[in-house]
Length: 310
Image (cartoon, rainbow, N blue to C red; front, side):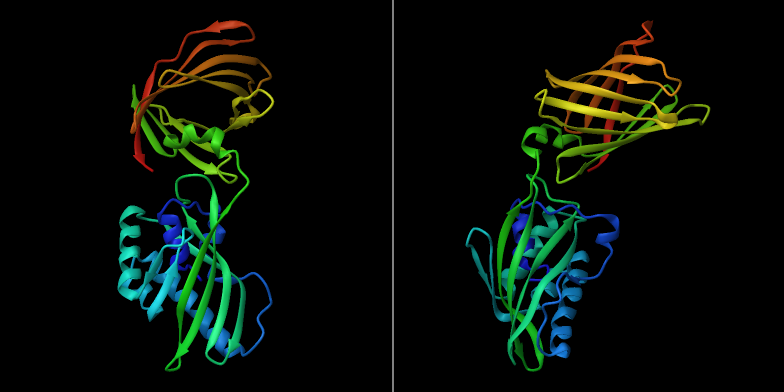
């Protein structure tokens, strides 16, 4: 249904939502198709519950969500598990809100039609932001609405998991990097934020370094899978037009990347980047074997970045 428990539960038990852009995540429930025959007043009343569901979900209000079902309403998840009644449905949402704090939901209605004066059918998708952990997928739902005492409520929601094309299976070792990381070294502050993009096929890392004199440098890095070389690869872009490409290889507790690039002035650069995972909330970074136009440069000092948030 519209943000149906169907998806909510699906995501709670490991489903992955389709990516949501900042613009999408702030929009109201939408109807992707115009296939909406019947009484517009009745259909509008049903669509209004989508907004009520989204507001309740985004506020973490499990009781308000459950109140959108009939007293004996049923939710059936993608594995065939059935939850009947508002109390059971509210209980599942409560668990989900504890496990996935901060997630927001958006509902896309693909089809909504009246079956008769007291019954309606709805099909659509529910999208979570940020996406749940695991391989990328979204929840497709089928909801039956029933009208009782002048009010439309959900009587049954059936969920299905739809896989998205992705190379997540070969880049999933980077999952622990997702989040915001900060380092304080010798008066300089480094902030690095990693997030999944393109259906979890790439990690996008944005970073900035503020030096003691308050000058700042920044850049963007994309990390994904190179099918020709059968290894991870990164693409770095820095202010002024500099760029670098890195071939990543696993090493004990981390990664080694052989970087080759071009500086903004046209000089060729070479370096080896070492990334060492210290634990779930800290990693070390260092650049060694550096040179510009064949002239050696000293290794950088190792810095330790600590997780600030996921």
